[in-house]
Amino acid sequence: MTSRSNRNKRLYQIGLDRSVRLKWLEKTANFLLAGNNAPAVKALLQEDLQGAFRSSNTKIRGSLDKTITILMKIWVRPPSDLHPLRCDGLRLLASLPRENHIAIHWGMTMAVYPFWGAVAAHVGRLLRLQGSVTHAQVRRRIMEQYGQRSTVKFAVSRLLRSMVDWGVLKDSPVHGARRSGGTYVPGFSLVIDKVELIAWLTEAFLHAHPNGSVALRTVLDSPSLFPFRLMSVSAAQLAAVSRRLDVLRHGLDQEMIMLTEKP
Image (cartoon, rainbow, N blue to C red; front, top):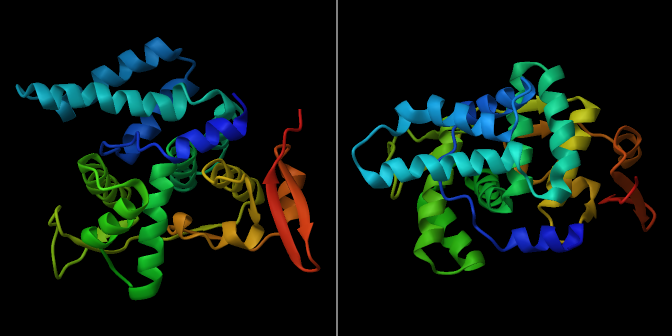
């Protein structure tokens, strides 16, 4: 199956229907960076996350296995066409300051699970329009896109709570943390001014996009990257630091950035 076929198939799947804490993704990547193979990483996660899921309830115990499956798919066993992105992401995690790590985990999660990016895009647009967002607003828009399914409703709730855990959303002090109809306001915002990281995030964004090519401005201003303020760069700068990005000029003044099959 081609990279584009893999990408398009992921676009219509939900897959991510669990709360995913940022610290769990950081641990998963760190276990991998420490030289552990996939079975060892899985065993370490089962041991480490046991306390968060300790319960006599079999549903909660089963949730641990599902959560670990998601963590493993993001950093340890991503789809084959995302292996180069994953490898460079791990290298960035090892070399960049801790405060930049959230952007790398965000990009990898969005590439593996475009549903994350779809939810984020609706959140980002609503925050720009009105300064806050409700669970009901996001759920309604996502269900228009993915269908009127209970799994969609459940997944939206879990992803919004994950974004609160990541610190990019906060429960509105007026409405409080009501999971079924909560109101959220922006959390922290991170300036991204490293060209290499912007190029990597651009690649992650394109893997969550059906065409694999967009206007550069679309990436830099994307609501799906709402927690980050990306420095203005040219497409040529991005292509210069990434062997998997290429530039296409559209008209006189529009730069398109696209995924390429360079070796």
